[in-house]
Length: 226
Length: 226
DNA sequence: TTATCCCTGACAGGCAACTGACAGTAAGCA
DNA sequence: TGCTTACTGTCAGTTGCCTGTCAGGGATAA
Image (cartoon, rainbow over all chains, first blue to last red; front, side, top):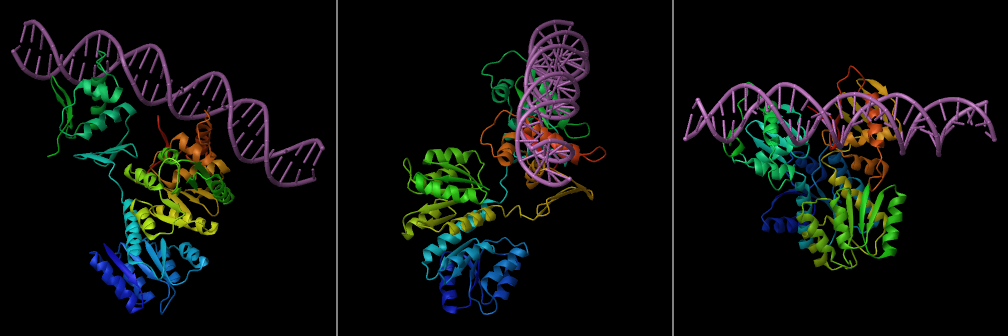
């Protein structure tokens, strides 16, 4: 993890620096507000630890400046003050958390890690299935092939999702009936065939490489990757 | 904003409940851990305020359970204890912030708002939302399409704002009823349909590319950008 | 060829979504 | 107070899409 520490007091800076490095985190120290802003702009940091009392500008300003410029790196404010209004003001200008000096290093570490963990959680989780140039976004309920959006009905989507969950694997009609329709036994129907045909018409349009494969006597599958 | 308050002491719950409502936030109170977990699963909340001492299970467990299930709603822990280890443990099991009782209501409010702001940071809250040639200015409460100003009623605006907050995402009728009308359960009405129709008549006028999309069986969405 | 297995166009029933009409309510104004 | 206007929510009739069945024809293996 990469930490930007904006702190002008050498003793405090050194203390935090060494502590974080001992935990195998990368640390860069800025000793003034403007230096902190410039460094933050490089976008290399996972979290910013920001002292409020700086020689050239107040920590609030640093915070505000970064947020105004669209920088959302999590910020942990360090304050010597215990006044409630200061804490509130800090949070209002865009800080994500604060810690009152003197603090326990373990607590600093726990809070930094909580902040980073949290900000990483928003890294888009892959709810997207992909086979060749075909993608299925489970969240947006959207299917695309080669960049073109394809409109599918509920049942079509359910079947495609099932097949895409294990590309290359053969799914029997019974299995599909079971998973998509919830039937526990074969009601002697050919719905599956019909829907596979409908899926083919939408996905394997003429000119494209066919992805939906029939395994005679067994069922259907999507072309395995590679 | 929608707050889930997990607190068994009626006096505390009532105090927070009334305070948040006065700030125009929606509040749902759960008086036990399991009830809290169940309610959280509905995914309707922007933030969870969680007391540690609950009748059926410890707040840590609630927290851990939610995180294990992939729920990343920001959690603010309320604790009567001041011990450092408790704070650290809370953060370790996935809480995002804590507050020690007794607390000042203003500070609770500031922290809740900071948490929510942070969690929304990936959808930066610009006062102007835009999808294709459709814009919504939250400050001026003005909607334009292709340069023409469109007059919307309060409800129409609320629905549009919700849909524009996540273009491409499907919003169920239930979700819309919840966010716009504040209903916690489906009152078997088709108001949403009616308002969508009214919105369409104003926004997707003939000759324009339709933006308001119906996803049969699921709900509505705005055309995703691109 | 024959027996299976699979594909697909046509069709009807059902249900989700749409929409026009209407009544109740609130706000603005004389 | 009465009048007007705009907004809101309900309802019922209609539309249009989704779904599953069926039958005839095509493909494949023995």
